[in-house]
Length: 314
Image (tube, rainbow, N blue to C red):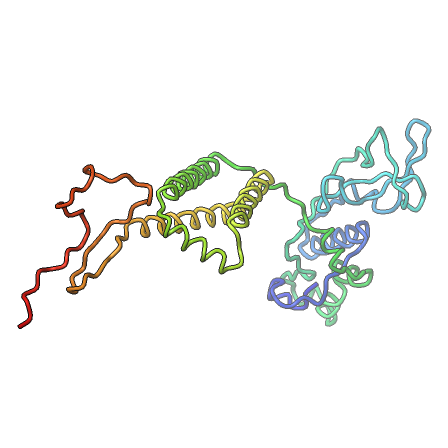
């Protein structure tokens, strides 16, 4: 409930309360009747109004009691419930249903700001001096709701929330999901291929960095496959937002690691000779075969540095 009508339920609420369904519906109908009288229009009570009180009915020789309550398919829809006692406290069934076959001809707009006082233009001859004060303090909806209010804690508010079925993956989602999955698989294959060509030096440096962080390669693989499993589970549960977030995270990490391997593989080893000149030598595996056959005694292997002939010192 809110105090300021002009703010349309945007100010701080006085509190969150609950009321029995028949009590609230009765106050709601009385408010509609009051508004119709002020507007000089006719108002007809719905058929469900006959069951605001616990009403006795006999069906096929068996006693039942009916009263307005919540429908089976949600907490924000009305129905006429079936009971077995005169106080309508013990639920009963009729042909397997606990809602009576009574037309639901009343619709209440839930989760919408509903003012208690509806002002209409009045001539001074129609009203007395106390009309406005009485209307502000005796509006049926808010007066009854406040009088019969019950505190509604966090558990109560949780039960009142409308449960909506999660939307499944539509065609556009499936296409984008397939693209991201194929992109990630492609990067994973490229990473495995580059790691096979990784030099021993780079492999040792990477192993040292992982060990310095207190991890082992098996830990990283375990976390990776666990993350993939979590993504699959969230996707099956139609949790779209967290599935997109985790899938994008995995793709970003794979792309970053692939770029690291690509940059490291393109760096050449630089050697500085005694004369200060830079001699570049491409890295190669230790077990790579020598090219151009055996090296002769007079031949100079490619990439080796020869000492220059210096003039004798006199």
